[in-house]
Amino acid sequence: MSRLPEYFIYSDGACKGNPGPGGYGTLVLTMKELDFTEVGRFARGYFDTTNNRMELMGVIRGLIEIKKPSTVVVITDSKYIVDSINKRWLNNWLRNGWITSTQKPVKNKDLWLELLKQMKNHNVTFQWVKGHAQNEYNNTCDKLAVEASHNPDSIDIIVN
Image 1 (cartoon, helix red, strand yellow):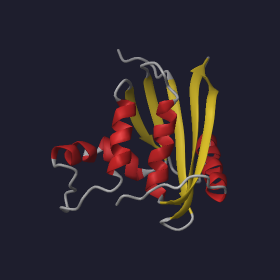
Image 2 (image 1 turned 30 degrees about the horizontal axis):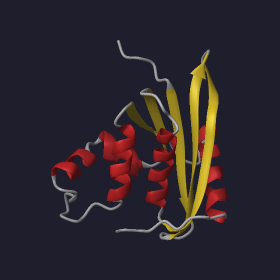
Image 3 (image 1 turned 90 degrees about the horizontal axis):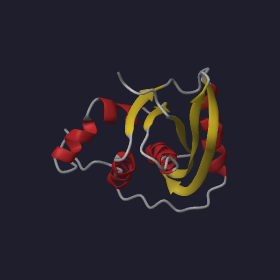
Image 4 (image 1 turned 60 degrees about the vertical axis):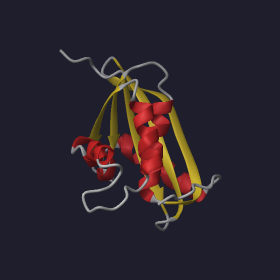
């Protein structure tokens, strides 16, 4: 029998232009008595980034907050992230030396490596949720990400 998740991470990214100013918003939650309890919310804006980088940064930030090995469910509206994990694209990229099936270098390799590092001590699963729909937590993350994109404080160096 599998363990119930100890943590839930909701995350979203936003970008005005691609590349352009962007941000991420993340909620880390636990479940107590069949109801979510917020552990923390995080957001940060960047001057020059992409939407996919912000989507990845949000998930990474949530995982950084979980200090002990745990069972974690990441919920995001990013098909880029969910498909990369659940359809095993990430495993193929690792096996193929960070080259895609179209023989191009994988974008955001630095963040994929960081995500793998942050996932190492956890049992993490990824679930997709439709963005801009009726999911309260996804909508909160979207608002945090958009607000952060309007107030950038960091330069995200785009490496690919």
